[in-house]
Amino acid sequence: MKRAEQDCAKTGASRIELFHLRCAIAAADYGSFRRAADALSTRHSALSRSVKRLEELLGISLFTRSSAGLSLTAEGRSVLRIARLILEQVEVLAAAGRRRIGLAREHLSVGFYTSMSSGNLRASLLEFKRRFPETELATVERSRSRLLHSLKTGTLDLVFMTGAASISEDGAIPLWSERILLSLPKGHRLTNEESIFWTDLRGEKLLLSQYDPGSEFEDLLISKLVSPTDRPLVEWHDVSRGIVKSLVSMGFGISLVTESDIGASFAGLVYREVRDGTGPSQIAFSAHWRPDNENPALEKLIGLLAELYPSLSDR
Figure 1 (cartoon, rainbow, N blue to C red):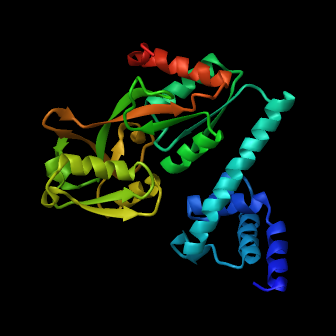
Figure 2: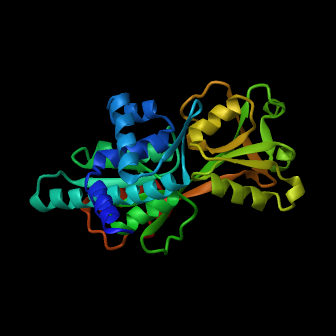
Figure 3: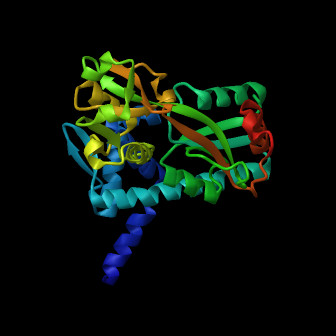
């Protein structure tokens, strides 16, 4: 790169603001400038200009714009991966500064990638706030890989995840299990059945989100239906769980959800329990944290979880 180009690149980098990054990340997460602006409580025009300015400073297009919404370009995916890490580190810096000068209340950050519309996760956090109202509780919804990275860097204190954890594992405890349900459009042939077996999915089109816990649903499907000829056709979508629900309600296919995901009503959907020969199929949940985390609020949450889920009492 020539000296002039290097100087230009440095100048562009110095003009990038955190607001530019937040706007771009929100636009990617919501697939729409308008919905992203609502989420950030800013004007649609301001958010759109901010993303456009970031693209100008970087010299690339982050998004492909169409009537269907926004989709990330290959360059955009790479840039936003770095942008998320930058913002996470800024959060760590800010939290450390607040604690250092004693201005912040007791603070606890927890992450998850499943629904909080109902179920044990929602109930556990509500109980924590009831018992410890003085603690500032922040929640973050991200992918499994990003949650684990945030846990490693100290951005998050505790992460709720699907998957079992051994009670002897340091920094992890097993929690509850939730039933796996099939989401169906009204009028689908399987809505006539009160319970559905995995073998009933043969020949169906199963829509899964590329975000968590889509991959775990696929692993579960493979474990239940060993022969590929017995499995439904899996169609992956680069959208959120909420958009997958919309696609199902429109008759594009069927999908799988956890029990807690049905707390928020969604027009046009019917849910049915998925079973195997032993009964309802379930997926386990667990909590994970860094053993060297000395946050007193974390100790309170772990103690509460041990009380709410007695199988942890031997820890």
